[in-house]
Image 1 (tube, rainbow, N blue to C red):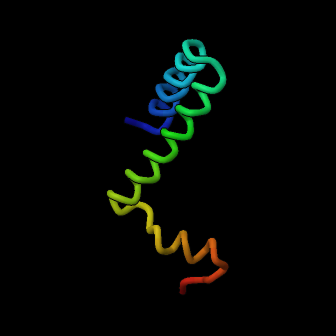
Image 2: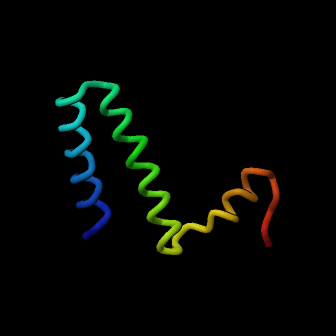
Length: 62
């Protein structure tokens, strides 16, 4: 699945959620989707949470 296809599918799903549950339901779905995406990226090794934490603290990893 390409990034464009995934983006279109995610957009359609969020639009359906917004229509069904209103603004706050939409916002909650976006928050949970973001948390799930970060957790999935960390679990698959595509995101290094230690590097993210170091960058948030102002440290640079070389």
